Image 1: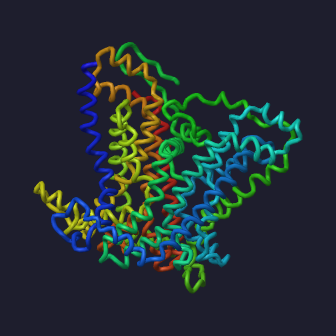
Image 2 (image 1 turned 180 degrees about the vertical axis):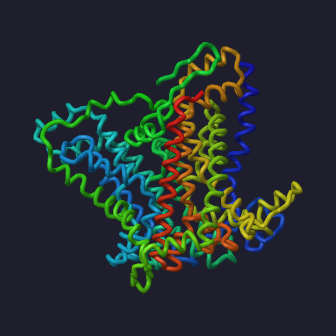
Image 3 (image 1 turned 45 degrees about the horizontal axis):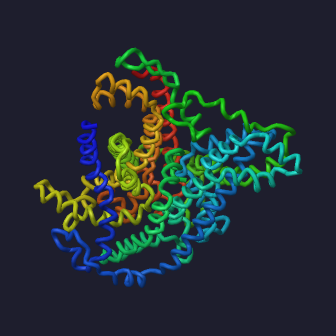
Length: 273
Length: 341
């Protein structure tokens, strides 16, 4: 085992500086957010914060944060719940039901997977404006309420359930919907958690689509509000950094609590959401 | 897995299925380990549906299919029609103009070609850099070592944090006069460029951000690939006295080929679509002299800053065809390289 120690030391020597470099922007976010306004224009920059905690109180006045938070929570929750519902139902149908046109329907879902969402921005905008949905909550999450990966993941999970389970449930007079709700879906909880986590992150971080379909702070999410703030108040970077930290905190908390499931989910799908 | 390990340390001859099959199998079954995606089909016979065809199935499928049809499939076809109109989003008065939008786009629009070049530049630099960094870190962090999860988490965190919140910080890191990056460069007597204020350096800045943001994904997928490698092969090589360098290039790297193909596939397409970093870094301007405009950003601007829906439709069609072409080339190229030694 004497050969192992230097190898391990070398590993740390290579990895720790790199990992620190990856973390640095987060540290810098905190430092900037706790500095006095003039410190930011110092050169060379101060590497330690000045603990100007009142920045966080001050940034509160610069935007309607509770409103932006509420909008983000509403649109994110709508997205998570709808994707869970549509993925569970469709995944179950593909895995456990017989029907005419199944291959065609499955082919359609595969075909949709090849479409880059960016290509649909303009037509979808026109559709939503015809519906009169511009600047609403539903415009932000309804077009994203079905996920090809969600469907695949649920289908895959339901395929592993033994058929006896369904047969036993059927003998007890259970229909598909009841079986799905009280037996199959609870058994597929790991897949549901993965989908919910990925959709939460996608929803919370959503930017381009909400930017396009919203025009007022009434329904805008945090990230769009933060960008607007950054374009108008570039003279107060310490407040901008405080705002950035506030909007990132929920994601960092979820990340710390669920790192394992999150990484597992992303590693197994190769995408966020 | 169809691996024939020829005696001792001679190269294992590995037969790989074409990427197309790896990808399709992976899509159908995301739990398939990428490093060993050759034979998985058998275990799923269990849940196969039996009994009468059911009408209820259509009800189960309806919500998901309706959304995918209305907001993905139909628009992706409609956009071809849209591209044949002059269509101002504000006045909302579509006029049929035939192929005029494409004529302008391909023959007379220098900004479009500039955005294509810049997108290729972004992709060609950021994808190899972020994949190489991800692989390097994955190999180092694959060992049992204290603090491993913390180190992995540090690299992965940027991938799940919002673009806007991190970019507003990076804008200050890149600040030519007061930023920490230039302070560091000056401290080691390197030239301190103008970064996001300079036409030459704004793209490298966006690329650095992209690598920072995206390496975590490559890390975790490479880690998943490494975890699925057969441990015996590595053990055997080490017993035979092969050093880590040799073990990596002769065994690990070839065995990771499916993971690398898969990552290359999603990285190339993902980075080809980059929009949001350009938008936030440049404050919706595209940078000095349009120096950071990518195809995605140009599309966004034509549609939602200038309201040229028809012209943006033509850009979308060209973009769509470029992505399909890229996908096609990758699949052809990779499927021909069946034998990998």
